[in-house]
Image 1 (tube, rainbow, N blue to C red):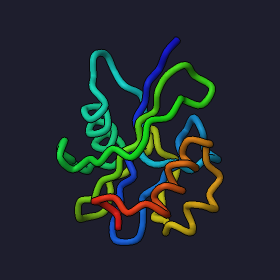
Image 2: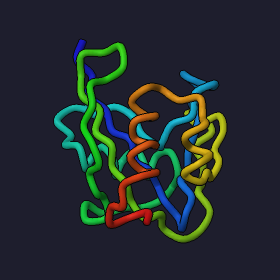
Image 3: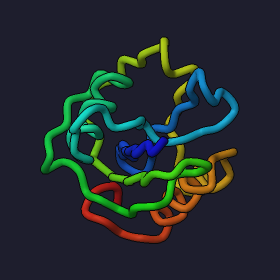
Image 4: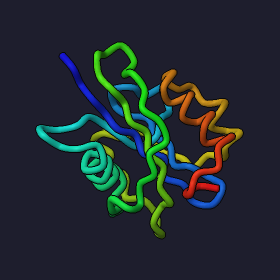
Length: 132
């Protein structure tokens, strides 16, 4: 089964919001999930951010960073970065088991899936429009 997914690095200042999920409680990752039906990449990213954090983003808020093969699945994982809206996240505790804000150095030390580790490394060294 092919399953495509998205991850969104929500950045505020020098920190990114990372989460663990009920499916993977020991692995830190950006907010994200799989595409549904005929959803596009950005649509899925906006929906996942809203479902998991309560934040509202627009297409223009998202900067695509990289596309990678899904770990252990025959699909594609697209990573975006976005400046985080103000206010505290309203974490969906049905899916998210923990959340925290990390610096670039802390992100590099997290237990993470290989694709997320590549994304964290890019965030640490690349200067995109969001998250400088």
